[in-house]
Structures are given as structure tokens and as C-alpha cells.
Amino acid sequence: MAAAALLRRIPAARAPPTALMAARTISDSTAPLTIETSVPFTSHIVDPPSRDVTTTPAELLTFFRDMSLMRRMEIAADSLYKAKLIRGFCHLYDGQEAVAVGMEAAITRSDSIITAYRDHCIYLARGGDLVSAFAELMGRQAGCSRGKGGSMHFYKKDANFYGGHGIVGAQVPLGCGLAFAQKYRKEETATFALYGDGAANQGQLFEALNISALWKLPSILVCENNHYGMGTAEWRAAKSPAYYKRGDYVPGLKVDGMDVLAVKQACKFAKEHAVANGPIVLEMDTYRYHGHSMSDPGSTYRTRDEISGVRQERDPIERVRKLILAHDLATPAELKDTEKEIRKEVDDAIAKAKESPMPDTSELFTNVFVKGFGVESFGADRKELRATLP
Image 1 (cartoon, rainbow, N blue to C red):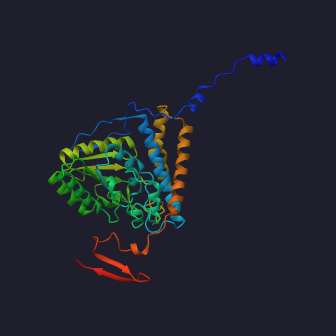
Image 2: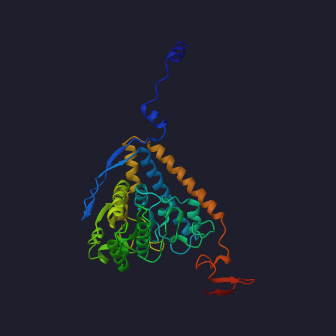
Image 3: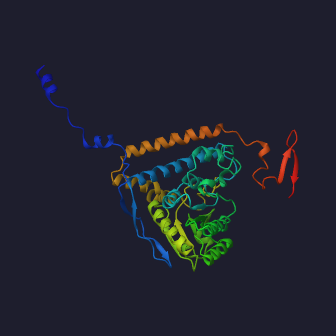
């Protein structure tokens, strides 16, 4: 009894510091942090930007969440494709998330972006939602292109995202046309035209760059160099794989595309340059974990050791995770909780997208020609066609 009374009189032990840390909330501070990029920028006929990047705890946590959401979406798309709920071509972006997120952090929705067919995550970065993304992938009416574009043709005009394009390199001249419109209207905005190393040898790219330089258009050509054009290594396809120098008379910058802060710094620098002086080329040194498309296992032209080595040493999400933990902005458990929330968010979006119906057959010829012209189907079984000429 005496011992029990003594124990009752002893004050409760204080919680250890680690327990107190776990109990606190994730930082939402907007106090500035200065972080150095992973590697220096390499430049061509232009002075590179500073390696010291200004960010905030809130921004780093947003980067972590946004890139993790993109990663989860692409992994889910892989499963949906294998379940035959996504048909046709499907090109996944996992590994390259830092390019989409860092670029968006540096610009505004008044700036334009146009890209190739690896476009799902650019759409999300531009403010697209998961339901319309998955609905489009599955060819449903609720999709961002009304279920008619599929994986390669996401689109969000209200955010100046002019889509994914299936023709290799064809989006670059269109992007320079968008830049022409921006300059013509005196908007003080820029266009980011994205393409891969596989498209870097396209003649139309050089034609577009030439006229952009002549007219000093605010166009930024972004080469997402993931080192393999389909299954061909860059060194087998390009005599000079220094893509940031390809502009010759146009300045260029090589960027670690797996470092979201480096991408942000480079894109901010590029926009300021382009609006004031004309085009610039950015080469994003990045890497895709999946094959070129879902029909490509991605392991016949590169080793599994190479892929796992990039995951371990350069993964963009893990880099941000380490920064967050190093600056004590969240605990490992809190970041795991964020990832669990994202998993549920993705699962819920897929379920909702599945509820959306397929486009009606009457929609087969709409959104192809100018309204009032073109072809329409009619009749009881919609097998009769009527053409209207101007």
C-alpha cells in the first residue's frame, strides 16, 4: 500500500522529445528558405542564374504532395491499362515530376504550356483534377477532352494548357505560334514548348526556333531529356546530345530536371529572358522509370541496375522528402500520412471517373470541323453520313 501511495505521488514522466515532435502539425510557414541546387547550371551564350533558390516550408511541402500525387496517378494508370480500362497509347511520366511541378512554380496561368504525348502530369500541374484526368484516360464523357483525346491529348484552355500532341515535335511550331500571339498582344507572358530528346532532331523544331529568334518571340523550348527516344539511347540518335546548345545563336541552359528547385529557378530565369530578349532553350536532364509507352517494358535497352540507381540517387520526390526532414518541417510519419491520403484520393477519383458514361455515338464527328460544317451521322442506327461543305 505504501509503495502504491508513493507511486501515486510521483508526477507523470514528461513525454520524450520525439513524441512531442510527432504530435505537432506539418509546417505551413511562408518564411523564406534558401537552398542550393544539387548541381550547377551549365549555360550556352548566357550567364546562368544563381544556384541559391528561395523557397518556403509551405512550398516544399506542396512540392512533395504534388509530385507524390502525380506519381500515384501514373502508377494507377499503369494498373488501369493492364486491366484494359485504358486503351490505345499511354505514356507515363513517373520520374519526371520535378519538371512539371518546378515549371509551374516559376510561372503563372497566364503563361502557356504545350507538350507532347507524355502529358498527364502537366495537366495536373496546370490545375487539372484527377477525375477528369482518369475519365479522359478511360475515354469517358467527364474527361478533360470529353473522352475523345485519351492519354495523348489532354487539354485545358482556361489554364493556357494547349495539350498533348501525338505527332513527334509538331507541338513546338504551335508553341512558337502561341508566343507570337503573346508578343502581338503585348501580354508580357511566355510559352513553354516541351519536347523530348527523341524529337530534338526534328527539322520543324529548328525552323520554329529560327523564326522565334528573328522575331524575338517569348518562346522557351524545353527539352525533357530522359535519355531514351523510345528505345534508342540519345548517343545513338544525336551526334551532339548537348541539347541546350542546339539553338546555336539562341541561349541555352542545362538543368538538373530531377531537382524541383533547380527547375523552378531555371524556368523563372527563362521567362524573364524570353519576355525581354526572345527565345531560350532549356535542357532538363531527367529520367522516366516506365518504358516509352505501355507496350515497352523499358528493360531491353537499359539495365534494371541503371533504373534502380537513378531511383536511389536522384528521385525527385525523395530529394524533397530529405529536404523537409532536414529542415524539420514534418516528421517521416506525417509524410507517410500524406501519401496514404493521396492513395485514397486517387482511388476515389478512379471510382468517380468510372461512373461517367462513354461519349454518345452522335458525338463521333463533333469538335472536328468548324461548327456548321463537316460531317454528321444520322438515321436510326447512325450509320448514314451527311457532309456539309462551305
